[in-house]
Figure 1: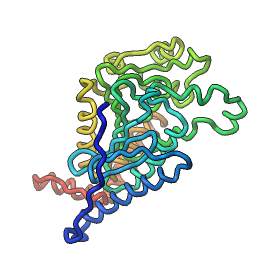
Figure 2: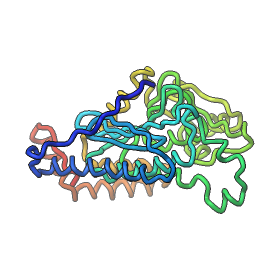
Figure 3: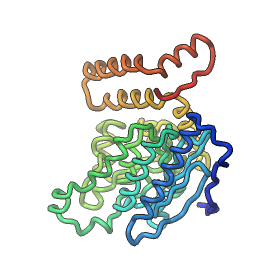
Figure 4: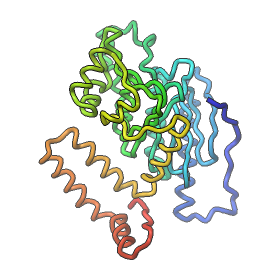
Length: 318
């Protein structure tokens, strides 16, 4: 992975501030970036690793790189950054991920999030050295891995851009996202059986819902991996891309999502996710209620008016 150049964030000239809604949204976005920095600096004994992307987004963590991409800087990109450990998901990394997601949820300028790793590994699994000496009492009493579910509860759409290994916890992390794009050389697997244990962060549940019982059972019981192409055929991923184009493709998808109403996108995401939890009748009732709820929004009025008037809609997330 190429080294990125560190530079100081640009500051808007004082004379350019009009105090209109767009400027206020930009200032809120900058405030979020400052919060991310303070959170990471507060980590005791952990010197922050600096990464500065575009001026619109800066973030400082030890195990993550966070920046904004795309037109209007509306897509946040979170990159897992433990290259020597193939992005193994240690506890500190997962805590940082939760902090970053919390801040991005509050950022009104962010309409979609892309989660990615390196070209060699999205995430090769949980940090085995960190958990090998844990006892049953510690795991059960402390509800071990419960905080990993933060990704699954994010209301903004999340796209996983998976290159290389997505194994064990890495595969589970990808499946917590709403959309999975995979590089041509990506590999997916749940090899916990080889370590004398089973998936513990949704692997047996989400994988079965994604690819069906037979393939999920084979992967979980044998520990064998499937390729990106096999994952696409099975329904685990929605698109396979050349390795070097994967991130741009994922950001492009995020841009398409982010140009729509964030409020309505959250409703749509809630309705689709409910299909995994509810019966068909219950799911249809929820969908109808959410559909009706859109008629209380200004964005629904704007969208339909723009269609009738043959112009582009200008959503304001109200």
